[in-house]
Length: 114
Image 1 (tube, rainbow, N blue to C red):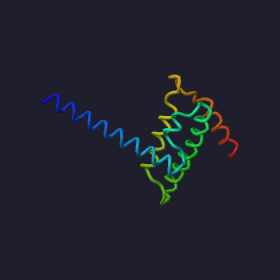
Image 2: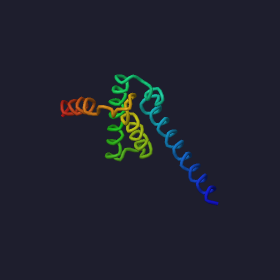
Image 3: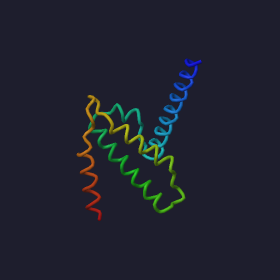
Image 4: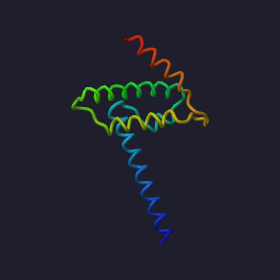
């Protein structure tokens, strides 16, 4: 009986992971035009540009939520954030992605606009 429960929990976990990945793929493709699998396999410079684009999309989504816009979707917002976390989690070589370079550029642009 314990093996059956283990298998059932593993099945549910795989299903939830697959659903989460599908949400991320759809959110990126529809809102940003980014292919997640291509972005994960892209070179570091390309990935850095995609991360900036994704951060901008998350900021736009956040603004929609703050202004209670009819087009705001919490699930899309969550999926974009999860995709950003996946892109920034690990570099191809297994080292953490250098967030300082991309964050500094993004923040400086935000300061210039103010």
